[in-house]
Length: 226
Image (tube, rainbow, N blue to C red; front, side):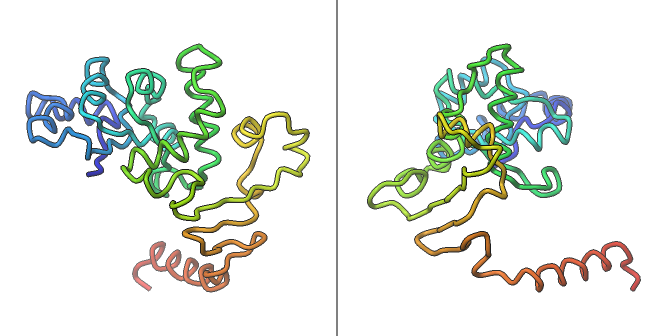
């Protein structure tokens, strides 16, 4: 079960005013706080609630850019990790993120953890990269089939070209990916062994058709009377 949980302070306040309980407590009362829960955001949580999520085996979907755009705050990712909670990275939707750029989310997650804790090593490049891959798969309870390159798992592969001025020289590939790489450096993508991006070109989507439909819907939304 996925649910936006403790995303904003207003959400928590309204829950307390309406029911006398915080949202997490209400979920617990309903028997929904368990290992099947994926809590999206979890920005405004207490230390006790972090421990409760850890004890339940719940996962967290950390969406740093969305939290910033909506002025929700900074989720305590380091505290979750220290408590043993699995934290994966997400983008949330286009309305509160726009780019849906996972490389940007990885970088943002690492930087926000540093500034919010005052610790430059709060979340390292390697940890941030893991949050976007294997830990995200663990949070979804699908790490047996996705999240890492291993025999028996789906052939989900992303090639990133580091031979760019902003990515050279390369001393630590993980660090370069997290702190110095842009989305336009993704050259090839395979999902389940099927190539969806080939040298920067989409193999299953017609760009012009998408742009045309986008313009049509833009006009219909902007002027629904026409």
